[in-house]
Image 1 (cartoon, rainbow, N blue to C red):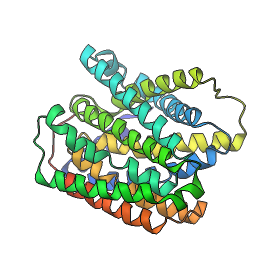
Image 2: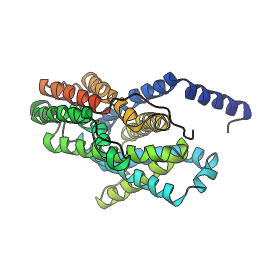
Image 3: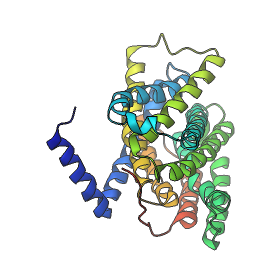
Image 4: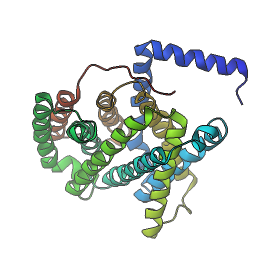
Length: 317
């Protein structure tokens, strides 16, 4: 347990981060580096474990790691959640579960390059949903970005050689990756609303816990089990929970309390770049020319659709 001096130190650190926007950007950069490892850990785990098992255990391990802190230092805040806040947290968890179920499954069928680029189209769907959810208008930049990203998506869909070498059905894998992006958009939009009122640990504990429960139910319905795998498989699953999930995704969740959802989502553009580099170095997957061209169009389209000056917002830490 933290003593008084440690608590004061943490408080001073939070104040420094809040006052210095570069501190927020540093947290986001660390998150990008962490989430870039996800596709590599998943590929190693898929040597034995089904995708639903990987997704379910990723969120389960993350929830268990958070439980001691959430249930001790944040028990009062959890107990004080309103019905609306709890419902939104549960809904956000459902979207997160669908995101991981779709995206992790996509890595069985297509290349890392195609999968991570397509799942990173999340900001486009955030921008399109903004008029309905956040009452924001769609700018000309969003339409240009959507057009460019659509062209890039067509190029990625046509890049069968590299993707087929890495997976059995690249078109299906690409569709699953896009489905993961749709679900992630809902997760981010709801998270933006909740993070204005909830501190980070209670928020992610509720969301990760609900996502884990949904995935465990889906896993059981599919007749799959979380038991009986080799120690190295569990090592990759634990690494997946600790590095990209707790360090990576939690960094972005924290940033949602300080920056607009559209700006946080655009920072995820760093993930495909890091993942493609790691896939080339570790998995020996070389993206094709069409994948590179399509990926560049998609990333540029996302930038055009989502770029805006970050604005500070008041929220709980």
